[in-house]
Every structure is written in C-alpha cells, then in structure tokens.
Length: 197
Image (cartoon, rainbow, N blue to C red; front, side, top):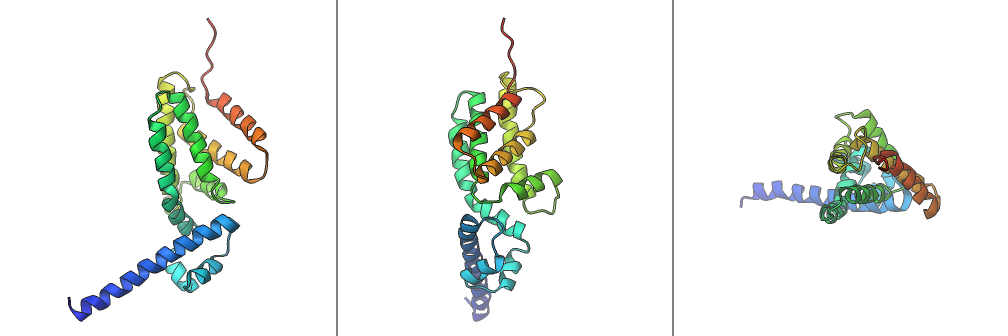
C-alpha cells in the first residue's frame, strides 16, 4: 500500500472513531438528561470540539436519529418475538407496548417524534424512523382488522401517536395503574365492537 493511500485511510478511521464516541456519549447524556441535553457537553465528553460534532450531526435531530438507530436492534428483537404470536390482536397490543417502551427510553423523546410524524418533512432526520415504525404499525393494524379485531377506520399513524402519547404520559410521572387505564381507554377506541347474538 502506498504512503498516500495510508494517509487517506487514517482520517477515515479517525472519523469513524469520533462518530462512534459521539453516539456512545450522546446515548449516555440522553439517558441521564433527556433529549434536550447540552450538545457542547456531549462533544466535550466525547473528546471532540463542537465543530466535529456538527460535521457529523448537523442538528440535534440528526444526532437523536442516529442514536435511535443504534437502539433499534432492541425493538427489532421484540418484533421477531411478536411475529411468533398467533393472535393478531395480541400481536398489535404487544407491538404498541414495545413502541411505548422504545419511546420512553429518553426523557422528552416523544415530542420530537410526534412533531416529525405530524409535519412529515422529508428533510427531517426523524421522519424516516417514524415512517418505518408507522409502516410496521400499519401492518399489525391491517392483520388485526382482517381478523375482525380492529375497527376499519383505524390507521397505524393513529396508534403510533397513541404510543408516543403514552410514553409522554409515562415520562411525566403517573403510576402504573393510571397508565394501564390509559392503555385500556386507547384500546377501547381502536378495537372492533362485537355485538352479542
């Protein structure tokens, strides 16, 4: 390998190390301080300057989207388990619970996700993760609708927002009994009402 090629390779390795350090540090800060944490503090703890952080992640939303991507494996693993369920209604309920837990990972996370889903701006880094989750939710909804468990008017987008809302409520301190009542209220809104013969 030529000296020129070696010189070209080293910066790429440094860039990868800086990116990895920023993601790892940002995740710790989001866990500790929420999504509104100081980005300057993230850069400092990662051992880089603010300029390096913004070269990798031009906005807070870009950094948050990248950190969420690293946590997506947990949700994908849950989804693999949910796919094994034979009951579409139970699968939908378990998926909504998995999303709620995912959205509860960091204080303040539901707000930017709901904003990105509502605005649906193609340039927002959070739009793609939201679209992926909304599409997956739609698939669960359609399967449950086909089995007669969910009202025809319900859409994956609606239940994505419902899971975000529950995560927001959870982050603001109600007890588990209250959360269970909120979940039951949401479920009674999307479930098909069967009349007795």
